[in-house]
Length: 125
Image (cartoon, rainbow, N blue to C red; front, side, top):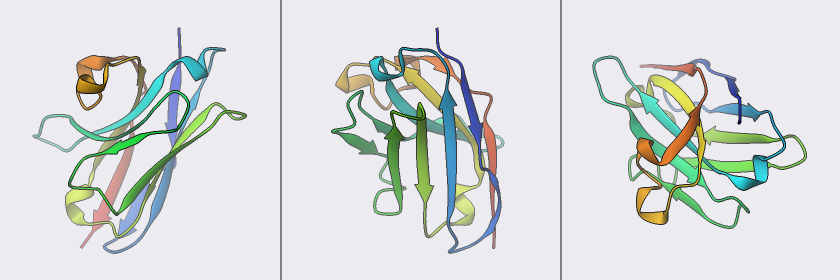
């Protein structure tokens, strides 16, 4: 069992940066791939980024590639999403997820078993 708690969301101007965090409880942090998804009002939840269990591989949606980075801190049981060059289209609630998806499901929300409550990111134009 894993509990996930996101933090760090807020309001930022276009072109700005923001780092959001997700703290995981439990002793099995190293067992899971960690992902970030987002959902804007009226839209379906979409994949943003993921990092493998040992941190040696990362995956990004095309819409955020070269702007966002994902990292994990094993000492703090925390995963981070650093977001740069933010656009209004990045406005959404961002959710952290943990699971063990095979590589072909890493961008699919059904590949993850545990979810946080979300943190709101708003990018003003």
